[in-house]
Length: 106
Length: 106
DNA sequence: TGGCTATTTAGCAATATAGCCATTTACTTA
DNA sequence: TAAGTAAATGGCTATATTGCTAAATAGCCA
Image 1 (cartoon, chains in turn orange, cyan, blue, purple):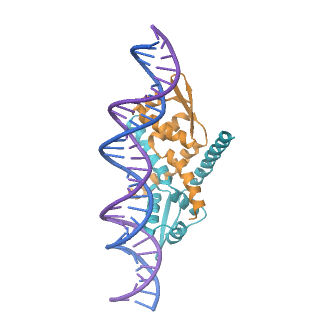
Image 2 (cartoon, helix red, strand yellow):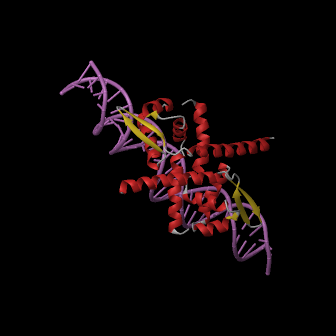
Image 3 (cartoon, protein in one colour):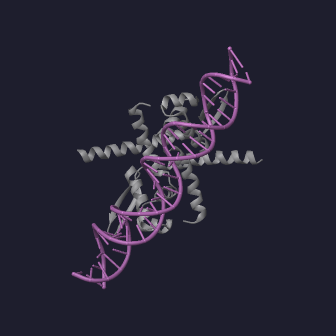
């Protein structure tokens, strides 16, 4: 693979990697319903606030979400809505896998 | 997050994680054009055959590709074509990021 | 100002991932 | 059968990721 192609796929992998974590998927799913502050996401997730903050910074760094500071709180929202297409395709993969499991189990 | 929701997102993250690597993205992109044997992918990627084999097993394990042994060679192909939707959305994110960089640079 | 809350950052330990080499397995053919 | 090729697996080290605690930063209000 030549360096240019390599760089191209590295860039794309970085975006996908930002989504490749259950907590971050949850966040994206929640934000697809509307913006939320870090505090609310933290409550929903039930992890340490610093952990949630880091997950948010990964998503922000990838350009998937954007933040908006209002007073003490920081609100996050999705920047690119097509992100949700990911979900429907992942769903197809899961369904296909489940069907296969069924066939093997009988 | 309750255990059931947690499990749901873990399952989905596993699929996405399987795509979250430049080499594996390259493989998916190549396979979207048609099936290929491990040997050809290995040549294209230029890594050790064992490395490519491991990447393929990650994709296979996630249910994204399927293999077909024919003689000495093993041919891989995409199992779920909507995987390609990932690419177009990732492209949108990259374009949005680039635009933003432009604005910042002036 | 001082105290309080929301968020981020730094640092650390545990765990997971990547990629190489060596080896094994499976198949073909001389 | 022996040699050769394709692919997968095991073992190893280097690196990356995760999620915690502690500390820093920022904004609000008495």
